[in-house]
Length: 369
Image (cartoon, rainbow, N blue to C red; front, side, top):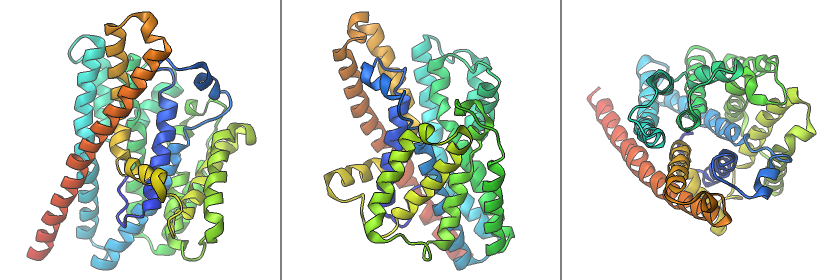
């Protein structure tokens, strides 16, 4: 979930839409919510927001790698510089929020560093980039990964690990293969993923945790964006229709086609966002851009804030208030305020400032070389 290096505001707005979809799904079962919200999950699905992020990342990583190669050539230095930027772009915020997860978990469980046998593997898999492997093994095989308030906060990191793994695949492909062969490799990965089994409960199959389709299609889009530009008047309808299909996709397609269709639609939405602004205009558009720019930090912090608020209200109010409409409104208001503040600080400190520092250091390094 990387910052768009050319600052395409529509792509930032797409990130805003994607993270709002993710949050809508993640509040379920963690705050006492009205019946209409709970009922909505019988008719819609919103977990596809992750695939929008993956399509954007695939496009941007392909663009970044090819830009670096055109400037500095295919060499070890160029490859290492790419990974140095990725590490400094993503890891500081992740490390900080992992520490916050430990603190909030301790508060929620009323003991410092609770259940090390469960917490330690969660931390290791998160920081070492194999959280999707760890989680898939647990969920597919129905193995408990710890209490909900502990494992929940680390649950979001599965997709970050998947992105790291896809960065490795795409970077090795682009640096070792020709442009045409690397695209063939991306297509092969997409086609191979279609052979993986799936069912109605998507996250009980490995394809949920290792879905490369949207990312690879985003990368392929970069190579062909000049040839497949969507007519300007059709771009907004494409985004709207695709998002509507996302919501009702389990009822429109058989289980085996759900993730492939979501991957294809994520790439279509990405294509629609490239060109003159259609999503980032007006008050709503600017709000989506603001959220999208902070989407990585929002993604990292929102579960911790949900559990912190839920536990705080639960132990400091009556059960009747906690489960009342007033309690829900209070918790949602606190969530919006705290998430906005926390993600903004995280974005400014761990993302923007560190990016500037890394750029300065790399510029000095290139000058000395």
